[in-house]
Amino acid sequence: EGKPMGICQGGSKDKRTKAIDHIMVQEKNNYENLIKLLLLGSGEAGKSTFFKQLKIIHMEGYNDRERAHYIPILRGNILSAACHLLECAEESKQEISNAIKNASLIVESEYEDPFNIVLAEEVVDSVKLIWEDPVIRNIWKNRSKYMLWDSTKYLIENIDRIAEEDYKPTYDDLLRCRVRTTGVKNITFVIKNTKFSCVDVGGQRSERRKWIHCFDNCTAVLFFVALNEYDMTLYEDTSVNRMRESMELFDQICNGPYFMDTDIILFLNKEDLFRKKIKRVNITTCFPEYTGRQNFEDASQYILEQFLDLRNDPQKAVYYHITTATDTENIRFVFNSVRSMIIEQNLKVNFF
Image 1: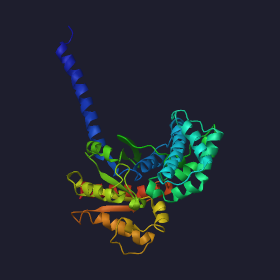
Image 2: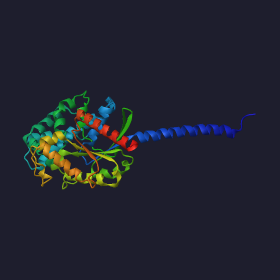
Image 3: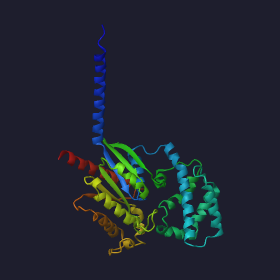
Image 4: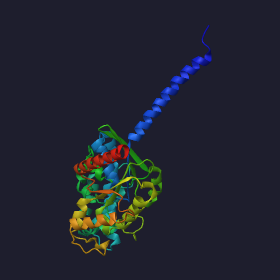
């Protein structure tokens, strides 16, 4: 006679239960060994550029299909930048020549179909004409006032290459491509048997209510501040200084209940742009009490101190780096330093 059905089913169930238990233990170990990095900071600070760099450096970068996805976006960025420059010229009440007005019509008509942008010769010539115009040059010189994209100059000056029929975006192009982050993006990669998860969230005010969903089990917060934003205002509210907004946000993150025991790493980003700007514009525009010299070393040190002084607990460790997120070698070096520090801190927590 055959075995009773109950025993047979029980054996099968027992094996299945063991298999599930084994998977759960593995998942738990993976979860405990996972280093979760959360990129925070206000809009335009460089979080998404850093996120792209990690994909380039520690994953397999961007394949041809992914690069092709960026072609209409990059071409659209150029047209959008040219249109924005023209809007600023109108806003400033400066006289625009008829040639520039005609060029603007050609650019605007091409921008009507953002998913199928072909930068024909006439469009390329029109963008160049706009860019070389003295009124537009003056607008660019005073770009902080008009909230123009940092990548405007790079993209327009590379328009011939970007307009080519067989154009394939370089990593420099991708790092300067402007796509506003909405929602939450996540990448996972492994370095020397350590698994990292990196989460990028939109920095604009309207996006911040989504942040709380990412706070759980976070190993470290990488907080981004654009050093060059000290004389700029928010897109969402032109009465608010961007640096002051960043400080307020850092205060909430650093002293709030969610990250009491979490490592915080401050990235003072856009060093390259700050070095140029500090020669022209003093940080007294944001910090009227500043009496130091108008140079990179003194001004960046002062800004760093303003952020560190926001800690309610002066003993709370805040690590910091001065970075240029568009510079791959700079980010490679900085992230290696960050990685070593986080692993060292984790060892102390777990074994000492």
